Image (tube, rainbow, N blue to C red):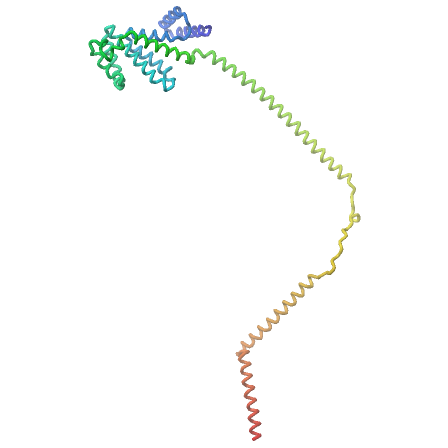
Length: 318
């Protein structure tokens, strides 16, 4: 309650600053007559009925458009058909009320402004005959909407629908200003507390790391001192103190270098023999004869000489 009164004062101060005198008077009158300072669907219904009774088509459409853009458009898609049905029923109630008040010019104005939009809906197909009908309360398409039972049922359905939406409706930004400011202050305090805790943890972590590094360096230095101390305490040995291993010599000692020299001599002798054979072959070839043909010639010369000797002996013997 105190928060609503505080916001009313803020709104009154803003209107005075802007110079909206008529709005201030209307606000003061409504605040004096208001008994319940909560959000009520009856107030919206009173505005709808006021626009319908005064045949204020512009105010009626503006109020419905405001509710549609701020409330009805945020509902689930399954409620869109119900919202559209309520809108059409509200416009039909406007036409029926204008006919009962003998305001034919308002009916003509209605179809002049909304004909382009309504002709695309099959539900309004028969209603374009309404301005030309002499007794629509007795006509089949329109007689239902002139009955008080339908009008009361429609207004009750619309009021219950608005009341249900207002219960689930979040508060406007103007009302939530003080709450959001308190929330921001609380978040800032919590953020500062968390930052201080983080700094303390970082300091503790750095101290623990430094102590650990000191302990590690001291332990490593102590280990090096112990190593040097053990090395200095260890007795020094000379070469004379080292005893050779007792290994028995092999049974037969083979001179590998002698074997390699023998192999080298045999290989050199074979190469020398081959070289001499090649030299003799080249010499025979250079002398114009062949060793094979030379042997044949020598053999033929020997046979001839043998025949001469044998012939001479025989001739002499004869």
